Length: 470
Image (tube, rainbow, N blue to C red; front, side, top):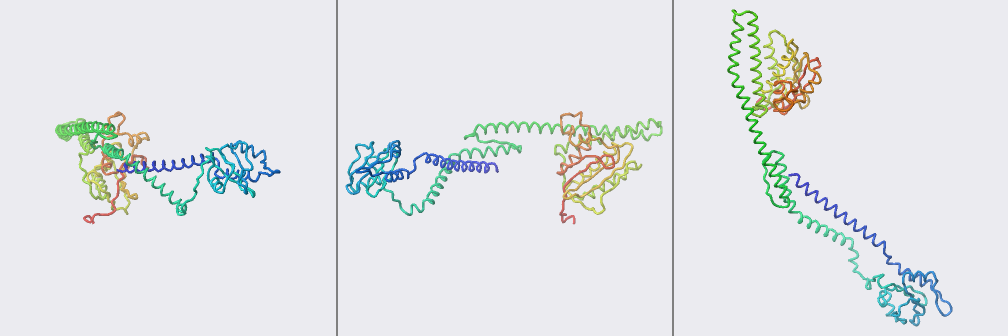
Protein backbone atom coordinates (compact mmCIF):
# COMPACT_ATOMS: atom_id res chain seq x y z
CA UNK A 1 0.00 0.00 0.00
CA UNK A 2 1.59 3.22 -1.17
CA UNK A 3 -1.10 5.48 0.27
CA UNK A 4 -0.38 4.75 3.95
CA UNK A 5 3.36 5.65 3.78
CA UNK A 6 2.37 8.78 1.85
CA UNK A 7 -0.12 9.69 4.57
CA UNK A 8 2.44 9.07 7.31
CA UNK A 9 5.04 11.09 5.41
CA UNK A 10 2.58 13.92 4.96
CA UNK A 11 1.79 13.94 8.69
CA UNK A 12 5.51 13.99 9.53
CA UNK A 13 6.12 16.85 7.10
CA UNK A 14 3.25 18.81 8.64
CA UNK A 15 4.66 18.13 12.10
CA UNK A 16 8.17 19.28 11.14
CA UNK A 17 6.81 22.34 9.39
CA UNK A 18 4.67 23.20 12.44
CA UNK A 19 7.64 22.71 14.75
CA UNK A 20 9.91 24.96 12.66
CA UNK A 21 7.15 27.52 12.31
CA UNK A 22 6.62 27.57 16.08
CA UNK A 23 10.34 28.02 16.72
CA UNK A 24 10.51 30.92 14.28
CA UNK A 25 7.36 32.48 15.70
CA UNK A 26 8.69 32.19 19.26
CA UNK A 27 11.97 33.81 18.23
CA UNK A 28 10.13 36.67 16.55
CA UNK A 29 7.91 37.19 19.59
CA UNK A 30 10.94 36.97 21.87
CA UNK A 31 12.80 39.59 19.84
CA UNK A 32 9.75 41.85 19.62
CA UNK A 33 9.21 41.61 23.37
CA UNK A 34 12.81 42.41 24.25
CA UNK A 35 13.04 45.32 21.83
CA UNK A 36 10.30 47.06 23.81
CA UNK A 37 12.24 46.69 27.07
CA UNK A 38 14.93 48.94 28.38
CA UNK A 39 18.44 47.73 27.66
CA UNK A 40 20.37 46.09 30.49
CA UNK A 41 23.20 48.61 30.12
CA UNK A 42 21.08 51.74 30.05
CA UNK A 43 20.89 52.31 33.86
CA UNK A 44 24.67 51.97 34.15
CA UNK A 45 25.16 54.48 31.34
CA UNK A 46 22.74 56.85 33.02
CA UNK A 47 24.70 56.53 36.29
CA UNK A 48 27.99 57.31 34.56
CA UNK A 49 26.46 60.29 32.73
CA UNK A 50 25.05 61.62 36.00
CA UNK A 51 28.45 61.25 37.70
CA UNK A 52 30.15 63.07 34.85
CA UNK A 53 27.55 65.87 34.76
CA UNK A 54 27.51 66.47 38.54
CA UNK A 55 29.27 69.80 39.12
CA UNK A 56 30.86 71.02 42.34
CA UNK A 57 29.80 74.60 43.12
CA UNK A 58 31.30 76.17 46.19
CA UNK A 59 30.70 73.81 49.06
CA UNK A 60 27.98 71.82 47.31
CA UNK A 61 27.07 69.95 44.09
CA UNK A 62 24.65 70.67 41.26
CA UNK A 63 23.18 68.58 38.42
CA UNK A 64 22.20 70.13 35.07
CA UNK A 65 18.51 70.85 34.86
CA UNK A 66 17.97 68.79 31.69
CA UNK A 67 19.44 65.64 33.24
CA UNK A 68 17.45 66.24 36.43
CA UNK A 69 14.23 66.31 34.43
CA UNK A 70 15.14 63.03 32.73
CA UNK A 71 15.74 61.31 36.06
CA UNK A 72 12.56 62.72 37.48
CA UNK A 73 10.58 61.57 34.43
CA UNK A 74 11.78 58.01 35.01
CA UNK A 75 11.08 58.31 38.77
CA UNK A 76 14.78 57.78 39.51
CA UNK A 77 16.42 59.15 42.63
CA UNK A 78 20.18 59.83 43.01
CA UNK A 79 22.74 60.34 45.78
CA UNK A 80 26.44 61.24 45.81
CA UNK A 81 28.59 59.51 48.48
CA UNK A 82 31.85 61.18 49.49
CA UNK A 83 34.94 58.97 49.32
CA UNK A 84 36.50 60.22 52.55
CA UNK A 85 33.53 60.34 54.91
CA UNK A 86 31.07 57.85 53.36
CA UNK A 87 28.40 60.51 53.85
CA UNK A 88 25.76 61.52 51.30
CA UNK A 89 26.82 65.01 50.25
CA UNK A 90 24.24 65.45 47.48
CA UNK A 91 20.81 64.00 46.75
CA UNK A 92 17.77 64.57 44.56
CA UNK A 93 14.54 65.88 45.99
CA UNK A 94 12.64 62.61 45.43
CA UNK A 95 14.99 60.58 47.63
CA UNK A 96 12.93 58.10 49.73
CA UNK A 97 13.21 58.47 53.53
CA UNK A 98 14.28 54.81 53.85
CA UNK A 99 17.50 55.38 51.95
CA UNK A 100 20.51 55.66 54.37
CA UNK A 101 22.65 58.80 54.40
CA UNK A 102 25.87 57.07 55.57
CA UNK A 103 27.61 54.09 53.89
CA UNK A 104 30.49 51.79 54.71
CA UNK A 105 32.65 49.97 52.21
CA UNK A 106 30.55 46.79 52.59
CA UNK A 107 27.35 48.83 52.06
CA UNK A 108 28.73 50.24 48.84
CA UNK A 109 29.70 46.72 47.66
CA UNK A 110 26.15 45.49 48.31
CA UNK A 111 24.39 48.39 46.59
CA UNK A 112 26.71 48.16 43.56
CA UNK A 113 25.61 44.62 42.73
CA UNK A 114 22.17 44.72 44.33
CA UNK A 115 19.55 46.92 45.97
CA UNK A 116 18.91 49.60 48.61
CA UNK A 117 15.67 48.91 50.42
CA UNK A 118 14.35 47.04 47.35
CA UNK A 119 15.34 49.75 44.88
CA UNK A 120 17.66 48.42 42.11
CA UNK A 121 20.74 50.61 42.24
CA UNK A 122 23.37 51.49 39.64
CA UNK A 123 26.64 53.36 40.27
CA UNK A 124 28.81 55.86 38.45
CA UNK A 125 32.30 56.64 39.85
CA UNK A 126 33.98 60.01 40.31
CA UNK A 127 37.38 60.92 41.68
CA UNK A 128 35.90 62.28 44.88
CA UNK A 129 33.04 59.89 45.34
CA UNK A 130 30.35 57.59 43.98
CA UNK A 131 27.03 58.49 42.32
CA UNK A 132 24.20 56.02 43.02
CA UNK A 133 20.96 55.95 40.97
CA UNK A 134 17.95 54.19 42.42
CA UNK A 135 15.21 52.99 40.01
CA UNK A 136 11.64 52.04 40.92
CA UNK A 137 11.32 48.67 42.61
CA UNK A 138 9.42 47.03 39.69
CA UNK A 139 11.65 48.37 36.91
CA UNK A 140 14.71 46.03 36.91
CA UNK A 141 15.71 42.65 38.24
CA UNK A 142 19.40 42.31 39.18
CA UNK A 143 21.27 39.05 39.33
CA UNK A 144 23.33 39.49 42.47
CA UNK A 145 25.74 36.54 42.02
CA UNK A 146 26.65 36.65 38.33
CA UNK A 147 29.10 33.79 38.11
CA UNK A 148 28.81 30.86 35.70
CA UNK A 149 30.73 27.67 35.18
CA UNK A 150 33.14 28.18 32.28
CA UNK A 151 32.33 24.84 30.62
CA UNK A 152 28.62 25.65 30.82
CA UNK A 153 29.13 28.86 28.85
CA UNK A 154 31.54 27.15 26.44
CA UNK A 155 29.10 24.32 25.65
CA UNK A 156 25.99 26.51 25.64
CA UNK A 157 25.34 26.31 21.83
CA UNK A 158 25.60 22.52 21.88
CA UNK A 159 23.41 22.38 24.98
CA UNK A 160 20.75 24.51 23.29
CA UNK A 161 20.79 22.27 20.20
CA UNK A 162 20.52 19.17 22.37
CA UNK A 163 17.59 20.62 24.29
CA UNK A 164 15.93 21.62 21.03
CA UNK A 165 16.42 18.12 19.60
CA UNK A 166 15.04 16.51 22.74
CA UNK A 167 12.03 18.79 22.63
CA UNK A 168 11.46 17.95 18.97
CA UNK A 169 11.75 14.22 19.67
CA UNK A 170 9.34 14.51 22.58
CA UNK A 171 6.82 16.42 20.44
CA UNK A 172 7.16 13.86 17.63
CA UNK A 173 6.69 10.96 20.05
CA UNK A 174 3.61 12.55 21.56
CA UNK A 175 2.26 13.23 18.07
CA UNK A 176 2.80 9.65 16.88
CA UNK A 177 1.25 8.16 19.98
CA UNK A 178 -1.74 10.48 19.70
CA UNK A 179 -2.24 9.63 16.00
CA UNK A 180 -1.41 5.93 16.06
CA UNK A 181 -5.07 5.07 16.47
CA UNK A 182 -5.97 7.20 13.47
CA UNK A 183 -3.23 5.63 11.35
CA UNK A 184 -4.42 2.14 12.29
CA UNK A 185 -7.92 3.11 11.17
CA UNK A 186 -6.73 4.69 7.93
CA UNK A 187 -4.81 1.65 6.62
CA UNK A 188 -7.81 -0.73 6.26
CA UNK A 189 -9.84 2.13 4.76
CA UNK A 190 -7.24 2.72 2.03
CA UNK A 191 -6.93 -1.01 1.39
CA UNK A 192 -10.71 -1.27 1.11
CA UNK A 193 -10.93 1.63 -1.36
CA UNK A 194 -8.19 0.05 -3.49
CA UNK A 195 -10.03 -3.28 -3.45
CA UNK A 196 -13.24 -1.49 -4.51
CA UNK A 197 -11.48 -0.01 -7.53
CA UNK A 198 -10.42 -3.53 -8.56
CA UNK A 199 -13.95 -4.90 -8.19
CA UNK A 200 -13.15 -7.13 -5.21
CA UNK A 201 -15.55 -7.65 -2.30
CA UNK A 202 -14.68 -5.56 0.75
CA UNK A 203 -15.48 -5.91 4.44
CA UNK A 204 -13.80 -3.58 6.93
CA UNK A 205 -14.18 -3.84 10.70
CA UNK A 206 -16.58 -1.11 11.70
CA UNK A 207 -14.77 0.22 14.76
CA UNK A 208 -12.36 2.99 15.62
CA UNK A 209 -12.31 6.64 14.65
CA UNK A 210 -13.37 5.95 11.06
CA UNK A 211 -16.09 3.38 11.78
CA UNK A 212 -18.75 5.38 9.94
CA UNK A 213 -16.58 5.57 6.83
CA UNK A 214 -15.89 1.84 7.06
CA UNK A 215 -19.63 1.19 7.27
CA UNK A 216 -20.27 3.21 4.10
CA UNK A 217 -17.46 1.42 2.23
CA UNK A 218 -18.91 -1.96 3.24
CA UNK A 219 -22.34 -0.89 2.00
CA UNK A 220 -20.86 0.36 -1.25
CA UNK A 221 -19.04 -2.95 -1.71
CA UNK A 222 -22.28 -4.88 -1.17
CA UNK A 223 -24.10 -2.71 -3.74
CA UNK A 224 -21.30 -3.08 -6.30
CA UNK A 225 -21.10 -6.84 -5.83
CA UNK A 226 -24.86 -7.12 -6.27
CA UNK A 227 -24.73 -5.02 -9.43
CA UNK A 228 -21.82 -7.05 -10.78
CA UNK A 229 -23.69 -10.30 -10.13
CA UNK A 230 -26.75 -8.99 -11.94
CA UNK A 231 -24.59 -7.74 -14.81
CA UNK A 232 -22.85 -11.11 -15.11
CA UNK A 233 -26.22 -12.85 -15.19
CA UNK A 234 -27.44 -10.50 -17.93
CA UNK A 235 -24.26 -10.97 -19.96
CA UNK A 236 -24.46 -14.74 -19.60
CA UNK A 237 -28.13 -14.71 -20.58
CA UNK A 238 -27.39 -12.53 -23.62
CA UNK A 239 -24.48 -14.72 -24.72
CA UNK A 240 -26.53 -17.90 -24.23
CA UNK A 241 -29.42 -16.38 -26.13
CA UNK A 242 -27.20 -15.45 -29.07
CA UNK A 243 -25.59 -18.89 -29.06
CA UNK A 244 -29.00 -20.59 -28.87
CA UNK A 245 -30.51 -18.52 -31.66
CA UNK A 246 -27.43 -19.09 -33.80
CA UNK A 247 -27.71 -22.83 -33.27
CA UNK A 248 -31.47 -22.91 -33.96
CA UNK A 249 -31.16 -20.92 -37.19
CA UNK A 250 -28.37 -23.04 -38.68
CA UNK A 251 -30.57 -26.09 -39.39
CA UNK A 252 -33.41 -24.35 -41.31
CA UNK A 253 -30.87 -22.11 -43.01
CA UNK A 254 -28.91 -25.15 -44.21
CA UNK A 255 -32.13 -26.54 -45.69
CA UNK A 256 -32.86 -23.26 -47.45
CA UNK A 257 -29.33 -23.14 -48.88
CA UNK A 258 -29.57 -26.77 -49.97
CA UNK A 259 -32.86 -26.33 -51.82
CA UNK A 260 -31.73 -23.01 -53.30
CA UNK A 261 -28.59 -24.72 -54.62
CA UNK A 262 -30.67 -27.44 -56.23
CA UNK A 263 -33.02 -24.93 -57.85
CA UNK A 264 -30.02 -22.94 -59.11
CA UNK A 265 -28.75 -26.00 -60.96
CA UNK A 266 -32.17 -27.29 -62.15
CA UNK A 267 -32.26 -27.07 -65.95
CA UNK A 268 -36.04 -27.32 -66.03
CA UNK A 269 -36.38 -23.84 -64.52
CA UNK A 270 -36.24 -20.66 -66.50
CA UNK A 271 -33.22 -18.37 -66.40
CA UNK A 272 -35.15 -15.86 -64.29
CA UNK A 273 -36.12 -18.56 -61.78
CA UNK A 274 -32.52 -19.81 -61.50
CA UNK A 275 -31.34 -16.19 -60.98
CA UNK A 276 -33.80 -15.83 -58.11
CA UNK A 277 -32.55 -19.08 -56.60
CA UNK A 278 -28.99 -17.73 -56.92
CA UNK A 279 -30.04 -14.60 -54.99
CA UNK A 280 -31.63 -16.76 -52.29
CA UNK A 281 -28.44 -18.82 -52.02
CA UNK A 282 -26.14 -15.77 -51.77
CA UNK A 283 -28.35 -14.08 -49.18
CA UNK A 284 -28.53 -17.31 -47.21
CA UNK A 285 -24.73 -17.51 -47.24
CA UNK A 286 -24.65 -13.91 -46.08
CA UNK A 287 -27.04 -14.78 -43.21
CA UNK A 288 -24.86 -17.77 -42.27
CA UNK A 289 -21.75 -15.60 -42.17
CA UNK A 290 -23.62 -12.99 -40.17
CA UNK A 291 -24.69 -15.64 -37.64
CA UNK A 292 -21.12 -16.88 -37.34
CA UNK A 293 -19.86 -13.32 -36.88
CA UNK A 294 -22.52 -12.60 -34.29
CA UNK A 295 -21.64 -15.71 -32.33
CA UNK A 296 -17.89 -14.96 -32.45
CA UNK A 297 -18.39 -11.30 -31.50
CA UNK A 298 -20.48 -12.36 -28.53
CA UNK A 299 -17.84 -14.83 -27.36
CA UNK A 300 -15.06 -12.24 -27.71
CA UNK A 301 -17.08 -9.58 -25.93
CA UNK A 302 -17.79 -11.78 -22.90
CA UNK A 303 -14.36 -13.49 -22.89
CA UNK A 304 -15.91 -16.84 -23.82
CA UNK A 305 -13.60 -17.36 -26.80
CA UNK A 306 -10.29 -18.88 -25.62
CA UNK A 307 -7.24 -17.07 -27.00
CA UNK A 308 -4.52 -19.64 -27.74
CA UNK A 309 -1.66 -17.19 -27.71
CA UNK A 310 1.83 -18.15 -28.81
CA UNK A 311 4.76 -16.97 -30.93
CA UNK A 312 3.57 -16.61 -34.54
CA UNK A 313 5.07 -15.20 -37.72
CA UNK A 314 2.68 -12.43 -38.79
CA UNK A 315 4.11 -12.41 -42.33
CA UNK A 316 3.32 -16.10 -42.84
CA UNK A 317 -0.19 -15.82 -41.37
CA UNK A 318 -1.23 -12.83 -43.50
CA UNK A 319 0.38 -14.24 -46.64
CA UNK A 320 -1.64 -17.48 -46.23
CA UNK A 321 -4.89 -15.48 -45.99
CA UNK A 322 -3.98 -13.53 -49.14
CA UNK A 323 -3.26 -16.77 -51.04
CA UNK A 324 -6.61 -18.24 -49.99
CA UNK A 325 -8.50 -15.18 -51.26
CA UNK A 326 -6.52 -15.14 -54.52
CA UNK A 327 -7.58 -18.71 -55.16
CA UNK A 328 -11.25 -17.85 -54.54
CA UNK A 329 -11.38 -14.78 -56.81
CA UNK A 330 -11.84 -16.70 -60.08
CA UNK A 331 -13.18 -13.71 -62.07
CA UNK A 332 -10.31 -11.49 -60.91
CA UNK A 333 -12.91 -8.95 -59.78
CA UNK A 334 -11.00 -8.24 -56.58
CA UNK A 335 -7.28 -8.56 -57.33
CA UNK A 336 -5.15 -8.73 -54.19
CA UNK A 337 -1.64 -7.32 -54.15
CA UNK A 338 1.00 -8.50 -51.67
CA UNK A 339 3.05 -5.41 -50.76
CA UNK A 340 5.14 -6.61 -47.83
CA UNK A 341 8.82 -5.65 -48.28
CA UNK A 342 10.93 -8.55 -49.53
CA UNK A 343 13.44 -7.87 -46.77
CA UNK A 344 10.81 -8.67 -44.12
CA UNK A 345 10.27 -12.42 -44.07
CA UNK A 346 9.67 -12.81 -40.33
CA UNK A 347 7.80 -10.63 -37.87
CA UNK A 348 7.18 -12.49 -34.62
CA UNK A 349 4.12 -11.61 -32.55
CA UNK A 350 2.43 -13.16 -29.54
CA UNK A 351 -0.92 -14.13 -31.03
CA UNK A 352 -3.68 -16.67 -31.72
CA UNK A 353 -3.08 -17.76 -35.31
CA UNK A 354 -6.75 -18.48 -36.12
CA UNK A 355 -7.99 -15.17 -34.71
CA UNK A 356 -5.37 -13.16 -36.62
CA UNK A 357 -6.38 -14.96 -39.83
CA UNK A 358 -10.02 -14.18 -39.08
CA UNK A 359 -9.24 -10.48 -38.55
CA UNK A 360 -7.34 -10.16 -41.85
CA UNK A 361 -10.05 -12.14 -43.67
CA UNK A 362 -12.72 -9.83 -42.32
CA UNK A 363 -10.83 -6.76 -43.54
CA UNK A 364 -10.41 -8.20 -47.04
CA UNK A 365 -14.04 -9.29 -47.11
CA UNK A 366 -15.08 -5.84 -45.91
CA UNK A 367 -13.40 -4.26 -48.97
CA UNK A 368 -15.26 -6.71 -51.23
CA UNK A 369 -18.63 -6.12 -49.56
CA UNK A 370 -18.45 -2.34 -49.93
CA UNK A 371 -17.18 -2.33 -53.53
CA UNK A 372 -19.65 -4.36 -55.57
CA UNK A 373 -18.14 -3.13 -58.81
CA UNK A 374 -14.76 -4.52 -57.85
CA UNK A 375 -11.55 -2.95 -56.51
CA UNK A 376 -7.92 -3.66 -55.91
CA UNK A 377 -6.99 -4.82 -52.42
CA UNK A 378 -3.49 -4.20 -51.04
CA UNK A 379 -2.18 -6.16 -48.07
CA UNK A 380 1.15 -5.65 -46.31
CA UNK A 381 2.99 -6.44 -43.09
CA UNK A 382 5.54 -3.99 -41.70
CA UNK A 383 7.70 -3.76 -38.62
CA UNK A 384 7.70 -0.27 -37.14
CA UNK A 385 10.10 -0.09 -34.21
CA UNK A 386 8.73 -2.38 -31.49
CA UNK A 387 5.41 -2.81 -33.29
CA UNK A 388 4.12 -5.11 -36.01
CA UNK A 389 1.61 -3.46 -38.38
CA UNK A 390 -0.81 -5.34 -40.65
CA UNK A 391 -2.32 -3.03 -43.30
CA UNK A 392 -5.31 -3.80 -45.55
CA UNK A 393 -6.41 -1.08 -47.98
CA UNK A 394 -8.26 -0.77 -51.28
CA UNK A 395 -8.76 1.66 -54.16
CA UNK A 396 -12.54 1.47 -54.06
CA UNK A 397 -15.21 4.02 -53.20
CA UNK A 398 -13.80 4.63 -49.71
CA UNK A 399 -15.61 6.49 -46.91
CA UNK A 400 -16.19 10.12 -45.96
CA UNK A 401 -14.36 11.85 -43.12
CA UNK A 402 -17.54 11.74 -41.03
CA UNK A 403 -17.90 7.99 -41.57
CA UNK A 404 -14.23 7.42 -40.67
CA UNK A 405 -14.74 9.46 -37.48
CA UNK A 406 -17.75 7.34 -36.50
CA UNK A 407 -15.94 4.09 -37.25
CA UNK A 408 -13.04 5.12 -35.03
CA UNK A 409 -15.06 6.54 -32.13
CA UNK A 410 -18.68 5.27 -32.18
CA UNK A 411 -19.16 1.94 -30.31
CA UNK A 412 -21.03 -0.90 -31.96
CA UNK A 413 -24.49 -1.87 -30.76
CA UNK A 414 -23.04 -5.16 -29.52
CA UNK A 415 -21.06 -3.31 -26.85
CA UNK A 416 -23.26 -0.24 -26.26
CA UNK A 417 -26.97 0.17 -25.52
CA UNK A 418 -27.18 3.84 -26.59
CA UNK A 419 -27.66 5.47 -29.99
CA UNK A 420 -27.92 2.15 -31.81
CA UNK A 421 -29.45 3.89 -34.82
CA UNK A 422 -26.16 5.70 -35.47
CA UNK A 423 -23.96 2.58 -35.27
CA UNK A 424 -23.94 1.57 -38.92
CA UNK A 425 -20.74 -0.46 -39.28
CA UNK A 426 -21.12 -4.22 -39.36
CA UNK A 427 -19.85 -7.02 -37.20
CA UNK A 428 -16.75 -7.54 -39.34
CA UNK A 429 -14.94 -4.45 -38.08
CA UNK A 430 -16.18 -5.06 -34.53
CA UNK A 431 -14.61 -8.53 -34.58
CA UNK A 432 -11.35 -7.07 -35.88
CA UNK A 433 -11.35 -4.54 -33.02
CA UNK A 434 -12.09 -7.26 -30.48
CA UNK A 435 -9.35 -9.52 -31.81
CA UNK A 436 -6.83 -6.65 -31.72
CA UNK A 437 -7.87 -5.78 -28.17
CA UNK A 438 -7.53 -9.42 -27.05
CA UNK A 439 -3.90 -9.24 -28.30
CA UNK A 440 -3.29 -5.92 -26.51
CA UNK A 441 -3.23 -4.12 -29.82
CA UNK A 442 -5.41 -1.62 -31.67
CA UNK A 443 -6.79 -0.83 -35.11
CA UNK A 444 -6.57 2.46 -36.96
CA UNK A 445 -9.22 3.21 -39.61
CA UNK A 446 -8.59 5.85 -42.24
CA UNK A 447 -8.33 6.78 -45.90
CA UNK A 448 -6.07 4.90 -48.28
CA UNK A 449 -3.57 6.90 -50.38
CA UNK A 450 -5.11 5.04 -53.34
CA UNK A 451 -8.46 6.75 -52.67
CA UNK A 452 -10.22 3.92 -50.91
CA UNK A 453 -10.53 2.49 -47.39
CA UNK A 454 -7.64 1.49 -45.09
CA UNK A 455 -7.41 -0.37 -41.79
CA UNK A 456 -4.20 -0.95 -39.85
CA UNK A 457 -3.83 -3.57 -37.09
CA UNK A 458 -1.01 -2.70 -34.67
CA UNK A 459 0.41 -5.44 -32.44
CA UNK A 460 3.53 -6.00 -30.36
CA UNK A 461 6.71 -7.69 -31.63
CA UNK A 462 8.58 -10.65 -30.13
CA UNK A 463 12.28 -10.16 -30.69
CA UNK A 464 13.56 -13.41 -29.18
CA UNK A 465 12.48 -16.48 -31.13
CA UNK A 466 11.75 -19.54 -28.94
CA UNK A 467 14.25 -22.40 -29.29
CA UNK A 468 11.49 -24.77 -30.43
CA UNK A 469 10.93 -22.61 -33.51
CA UNK A 470 14.57 -21.90 -34.34
